[in-house]
Amino acid sequence: MQIWLRIPKNMLTKGGRHCYGEPISYDELSWSMNRMGIECVLEYPEGDANDAIQKIPPNPGEYMTMWYGDPAGWIFDDYPNRGVIGFTRCGETVLPREMVENLNKCDLVFVGSTEAKKCFEQVWDVPVEILLGGIIPDQFPYLERDYENRTFTFLHVGSTQWRKGSDIACKAFANTFSPDEDVRLLIISPGKTPMFEELEKQYGYDNRLEFVSKIIFDRWQMAEEYYKDGHILVYPSIMEGWGRCLTEALYTGMPALCFRASGMLDQFNDGCGWWIEPDIEKFDGYAMPSVSNLAEKMSYAFEHKHLCKVKGQFAHEWARDNLTWEIGINKALPMLKSVYESKSL
Image 1 (cartoon, rainbow, N blue to C red):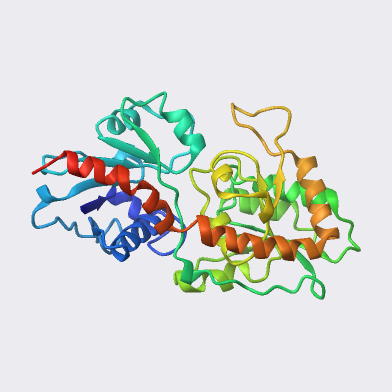
Image 2: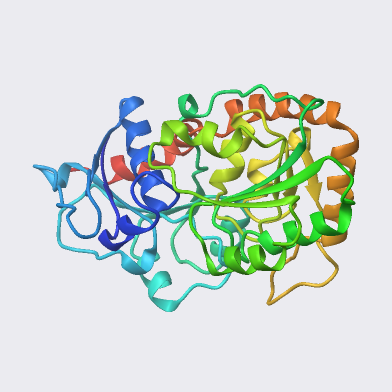
């Protein structure tokens, strides 16, 4: 089976080619397929939106086209193919018309979670299946953490924004711990988003909250630079097509406090930490993490550090057995082959 993996060129600027953003998954998906013996050609093997040069397979009619990323940017052309696959990690429940129109031009569409499949199979006219995202395991080794002799550190990592529940993490922490407790909240963002600056200003008086903005362009440094100093991940993300930061943290052996919703339902197991329960009221149709429940779970984790270590060890094993690209691709492979073989030359 041969696959031509395509992406809207303008998406190559989002987060760079190596830090957070769609291009990481685009590159890793191709790398993993080739490692598994599936020939996968990237449409843009290198570069960004300014200088990337399109690569067209010598015989495109022998390849199945697989579109990745934002469906609104998929430009369908007249290249012959062995079928058209869509792969969107969108977790939104309401999609613009142009997205739905392009998705309906595919023979099959993959989404990144069970919740997304439930939502979208009622909207699209084509079959909807799941292709779970993953990481490159070698980049996120198990990290030993000292849970007893260091300041206990809650970690909130990823782009600081409303969708990630960044303000909820800060509010729950500030409401939970007194100044004399040896605990802190470390917020690491790849950029100073408006919410990052807003929260930094709001909580700047409290030295227990540390705000760090840094971009790591070498993916092999991510584990050390982003996760080594944390004891437990705080992940009250409201909506995820698939949460990369959660998988990365789990793979390094970091337990998590994770919101019980969206794509996290596929990624997380309560052996890996503790669920954050939803609030009674929704916001704009979205279930919201309960600040009080998160505060309770933070307090419990702080008081039971030995359990954090045990759950961290389980988290690493869970991620190893469930959350790599190759595992997701293997589960999707029969469906990919079915489309490919049905479009005989």
